[in-house]
Length: 211
Image 1 (cartoon, rainbow, N blue to C red):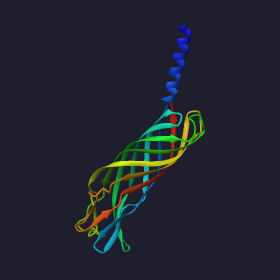
Image 2: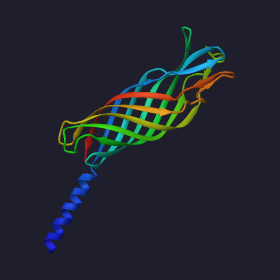
Image 3: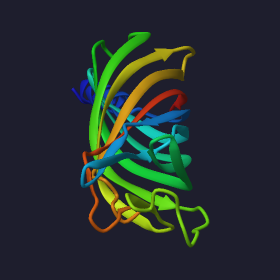
Image 4: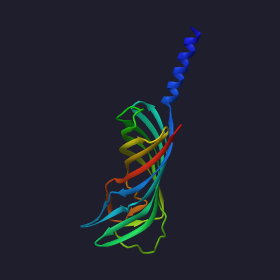
């Protein structure tokens, strides 16, 4: 009886360890933003961020056969912009996103190819890092400022996870980082208004190691 109990406990602990398997990894890609509309009376302009490079580090946990969880930090480097009528103003910027996502897999944990969808949330920090000027082109629409703003973040996306070694994996994925418009960083001028949500579409290629 005691031997059977020990065997059952061993199996249970082994299953728990397998269910709690972790991975650590890194990914890189290009972040592409949806333009926002700035209106001033009968005139309008577009504002937002130019495409820029992005990099992530993450820790992923295999919770169940078809469910995983992931902590992720992503930094993006690029320029803010305001453009209208062939004129464009730019300003160096950074973004920092920290979030937790649930990953819903279409195949079981032992499969070599695992398509997934992901959804979660966290915070995203927008930072203007350029040099402010006394006069900024298109300043009658919006000012690109050397300030910092934190916004709540919603993340959605998907991709495929490929097992390429006993404990090594490749991720091909895309995420949409959604926040309210950071109106302190991209500040509408008096009499102007900015409409829409900020979307940062981020296709990435990543690698991870399990333990």
